[in-house]
Length: 387
Image 1 (cartoon, rainbow, N blue to C red):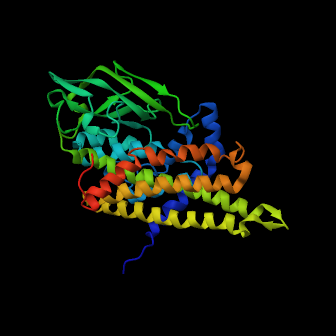
Image 2 (spheres, rainbow, N blue to C red):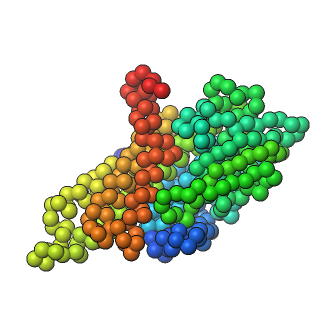
């Protein structure tokens, strides 16, 4: 009999993660962001408890689970007010690509420290002149004897200051034109010729964004992950998990905001000592958020189940829809939460105003909602391609 209940193991996983993340909570995140601190303490504790590598095979130090498990972890962290953005990058994108496309020696080298959190691997695909069109990537790799030499720039790359390496998406020098056939390279962040500069963002977060400069970075042949000029599926081995994780992260943010709003609506009284939550002008927007949140959660859970079952096309379709729904509900929930709090919602004390701005990222990255609508129109509905 098929049910919509998660297995007992995942329920227990959620409870354990929620307890750990709750030790840190929103106040800790806000403090780290204000003071220029990082989430390293929580990150390493998560790794020691096996939560960062639940999707990585047991033979490489992971939990042997799937994307459904890892997405549940990031959702619970966010719901506790302590989202770990770099989980989207290191174990989900990089871990998935390496697990699916790397050699055995590369898996043995990279996956165990990614699983326990001692090696954080960032991901570099976005370029300033490419925007949403990854086929316009100009970062190139040139063979030089037994080495590769990389040149190019990347932008809006998360967490490079915390990472020991970056998985860079490039194209080989003789494949500069035409459709992208990605070549993926692990680049140490201390490699000669590799540098980065912070991008000042409009909200506070422990995780920072960077522009990368890759100037004649020399790498050994073993830095190439997967096939030279491989097909797009080796790239989407990581991009589908990115969308699923982004959706789950957004849902967790929405749940945190909704919980805070409901608490406030139960306690705050203005007229005749009646809690404001008794008024439909407050209650109905909160109820609407609850419904839309559960819809979005079902979408990412289905996308993750399809990915874990090896259905890459189905996973891509639902991962895009889940990412769209997650971005919408994170924005809607934080907006309603701020409005429920009135003026208090914009104070630093309640921590919702900064979250409302950061939630907007769910509509923009890693792929905009407009490009998702293009994808669904073309692939799900069979309409002509518009771009």
